[in-house]
Image (cartoon, rainbow, N blue to C red; front, top):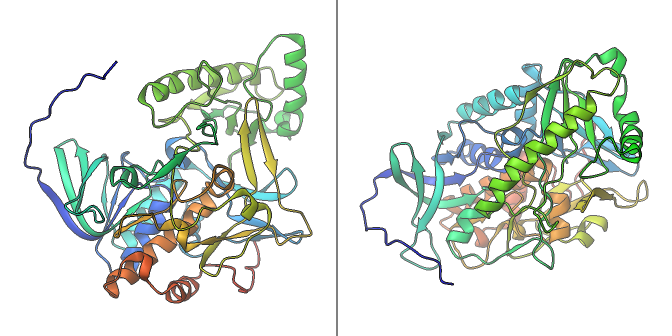
Length: 454
């Protein structure tokens, strides 16, 4: 049955501003892209739907940086440097950064306080003189030429506004800007099913002495509760780890599915609505179970985040699609703009399955090619973050915050080089981009010495 529609009258849309670079989305990729472009002297605007930065890391309550580190021949190193180091230093000065902790005994992740992340990101962008437009939802594009975006339309409290720019960078996570411009994309696996989303929560009131290393014992307690029939869990793998204070822990037991068992689709409005409600139900059930765990008896929910944690929606088609084979084979690329040290993290029905490159035999990281940021068909657009050009398996690894920082910094640098040379982003000299990234302190592989320390 054809969908009913309403004809919207034509209207004049006020121009919010004219910029050299406009970035849609304020997650790790957007933060890095905007800060890098502005630091290079380009008039830059960052547009964000919420009133704060951080993307899924704050809006979905992830509270944990994954992919900053890598296991290089059995030794741990922080591989993601550059603009990410500036942000981490600011979070640390606010006493909001945990020491890195081991995941599955193989790779480090690093937790943070969400309030500190928000404040640190504000300060980073202010330092580099980025203009920010909060509470602005991208709504479409204007194109008088099928290969060039003239303006991005955004919805604000003051109504619809237009933003014009020489180069646009899509860091929306969902590939919204690219899709509006007609860039081809894929969603999910070969059957169109994306990774499962999760609803995070944070608990307070934990007795850290009695809780101890509860994350080691909770999986067995879950098995016992399942066998006894007292609790049911949507997935086997659980994340229960302390934040910096010790009395506050982050929790993720959830895996949000549709009635048919497949993952909620984060670009379908009805799916998102059902997913938010189901996610909160699962979070409550996880909390009720945790109250039976020693040290958690008097705990309480201190935060359910503003939105469901989406892992995968659209992935644009660019000059190269990073694959699962690239991740597990620790691939190298002539046009590398940084590296990813996170393994394939497959959210399969009822479980989370990690697949690592050989450790300690391999170097433990793959390079990320510039081509994955350059979409097909549009001349003044770059795409960075989890919606960049990757296969389903490749995205299962390189979607995490570490790789997003890498892609964002490269996109911001590429935009500034393209503008300076009056070129399209796809036509810049990659060697100049790589040199610029090295000078900014980034580690791009390509024979460069591996950064020391964590």
